[in-house]
Image (cartoon, rainbow, N blue to C red):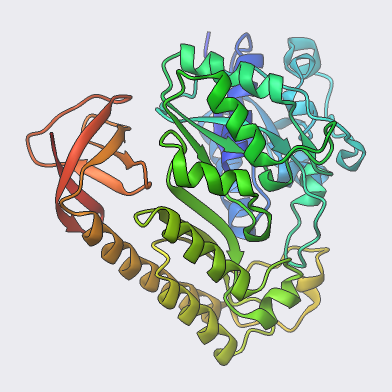
Length: 415
């Protein structure tokens, strides 16, 4: 019997959901599951390419396509050669969708905008990973002008505290030492729960109720929704990792307004300054879109200067990608080559900030979660590899001292 092959594209939430599907589909033979992303046209292109490759290399396999791109346009994916079933984002997480009988029943994609709750799932293993992801929230109630994801994920809904605690306990029992809380818009967690708790309260309760959890980390957060409990944890809780990844998108107020974001550059700069005041060595990442419609040279230079001035070391830069049906897709477009050129300049600025940040960490004592025998990430999420001849083990937390910096991060000796 051939275990189902899962091809995952996109975010950490998709990674988590692929493990849910792996458990549900464990009894199926000769199945390829493609978990798609719809954030950019490139992500969709790669997923389509994966479907075609799977059909070419395994013509007898049953191909199931799911994820955000499949949710938004199921007919397009159903028409690809070899695709036997298309599942929506709700259906893919239901055990009933993965029986032999269901597999022969055709496509199942319900109205995701009608979703009102998120069912908890118990995942105890992430294939090939030493860091575990836990879904705490689904969907998004905001309508940024460039984003199609709310139509793939539905409205925002939260996983209750008890279910999150149970999931984290199960992962710790399975040997995971670091957990990353993930979702579509995780700082909106709790607004639909009794008492409307905030994300920081969830983090506090997790750390209190699962004392054996060694490291807790957040995925991408909205700059204007970081609550006071999160700041207090950053300041005084050693198990709460000193790292923030900001959903920034631009460093120009005009572009942020046209994106319909809820923050301005001053808000993001204030977050960076406060974080560094609390934890001077904190790692800071950001998502940025290059070449958003109407972004002229001067507006782009504002974003580039924001990155440089605030020394953001860990950037996820995306050339703007039109998403049909979004307001931004109707705005005056920037030429694709210019988008790519601007993305390259932003990445170069981020690479310089990363090198400068790593130089500041050189010589300090760091704690690294090993992801292979020779490489891992520090609490600040700095990439670290062991000096030549040094070997550890995946899943171990090593105390190290960086002795060199290169384009790939830090080189360190085990203490």
